[in-house]
Length: 221
Image 1 (cartoon, rainbow, N blue to C red):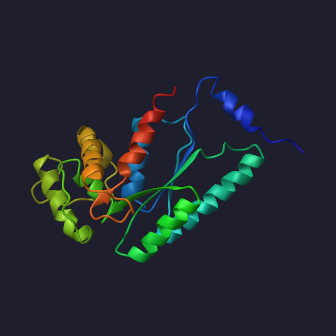
Image 2 (spheres, rainbow, N blue to C red; image 1 turned 180 degrees about the vertical axis):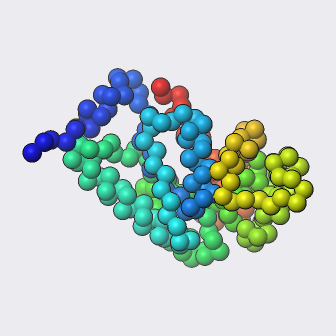
Image 3 (cartoon, helix red, strand yellow; image 1 turned 90 degrees about the horizontal axis):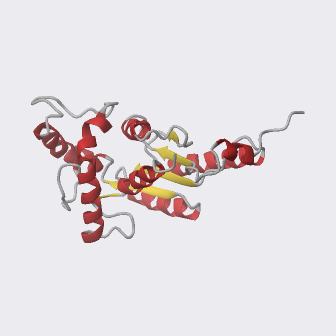
């Protein structure tokens, strides 16, 4: 019976220098979040990093955590066989979807499993909005935030006068990229002046944490 390749063999392929971490990223959305992080991964040329982006649909944040647990367990079994590298860090990307109790349960279960929960309230699009402005004004939901985002995108020339925001736009990351540094700065300022200790602050986003980690990986050749 042929033996599987050891994890040492896999590591040696990357050379003796510091290798990039092996990330698992599980996203809630089938389009917006997946397209955004997939584009970011390719833009940073992280092809040698095993960043797996999995779409876990359903709108139930607990399902996101459960799906992640399954993927981590599968990875553990494959690692023991020498077929895969173990995940160094695991990220779960989701928003509250106006289901605050399940949201809190998901946060707790994620922490218990050492997952890094990348949350946005009220929705992932808040991350897009702070590319253009800094605000601590709460939003009831996506429908309330979207017109504000569309207005800023029209000012920036990303949307035409009567054009609407498209959640499935695969080029959205590149359209927003010129303002990425602004978004990172606004996130840092928001975290400083508008604490999000329990992960439930409205508005809030932790997307910058994941992006900064991915940017760090680019330093490893």
